[in-house]
Length: 396
Length: 143
Image (cartoon, rainbow over all chains, first blue to last red; front, side, top):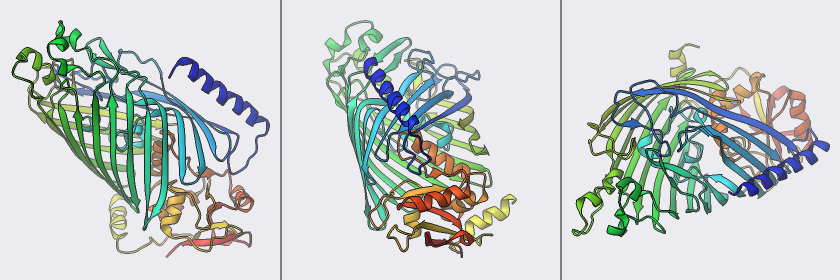
């Protein structure tokens, strides 16, 4: 989103909110109401390895070592929403977190106008969160999640947090349940970390996708698809130190699609919560390996404490290059290799109605070639790591 | 309540439909809403923001009792067997991902009744003793 557009949106919200204040009513429809809310996480974590740094997701330029650090999970978000009338409202949200350039500079994460002509249809235009996978558009909101962070084996490769565009969703009763469909399209405004201080500009990349949800009692099942067409070249050549892409044009990402398919099942009944997700990612470019990932979490609330146990797994398939491509070139794609699984155990303690404390241990078992989800760019390790995490999540 | 009775209670929920609660909460709508009865699933869909349309075709406007009163916690315990922190975590996900907004939170019980009588689509939960001709009971949250 261009700065001018953001300014326009903020001004528009400001104008309607000023207009609304004049005719403020205590009506149930809440028209003319401005609300300010926020969320945040204070998290510290460490691992037992210095050679490979554990990150929350690949947008982060570096991650955990054997010293306690607050950078990968700590964040704060502020949101202003304004309800213009029953059909129309606007939301602006900014998040400060550890980002691709190593700073905490706040970013505009959401800024949209929503139009709900009736109770089944919703249309949003502006900056929106990406929802490639179930729960993906709230992965920064620690208080809404059970675990300290969304399992990186599954969510770690998602560097797209938001896009500028639109989405439309429709909900209809189906049998005893509800069927909900959503479609979205837009362009990325983001950059992501790539290698040490080299970042990769994702902005302008096209994002398209949608999902179909079935909700029935405690069950929610989702099939989703998303795809991305990259606009800018990944800085493969800067990493290689020579023009690798002209030797192996298949390493180029420009105008190539990556496709993300997933199935998510959530069962949430009383104190019991179960989550099960599978995904498959396929890339037209040879710069990334095709990947399959999945995870399962089981949790049971006992009083104010909810212990949980999880398992996640990610495995990618090495890219096959033509025999004419030298191995020092094809090995560049090996940087996107993953072959590991994680067992994680933790607990969430709801201290108050707006505050929780979580503790979690992750045991990662993988192949030494499972390097994609770690920093720096070419970590050397034995594939085994234990991660200890503590997090305080709050909303206000 | 200590851990074990709670665990037992939760486990036995699959056998008995409702925990015998200490009060008589009823789900009510505006008397002019054109709705006679709602199923538990329909009430869940409305209060959890999944689908907010009444069977009569009008938009449902759910109202929450103030968090300071015991009615709210009791209602969600009876409806979905969830504690308020879980309800808040649920809404945090939807609010901060720009989805549905939570039920309108009243400041006191009088405001709940006021809103219930003002809007045709209004739906709330009150003690049975508070029911009068301006509202209609559509679901009883008791054994």
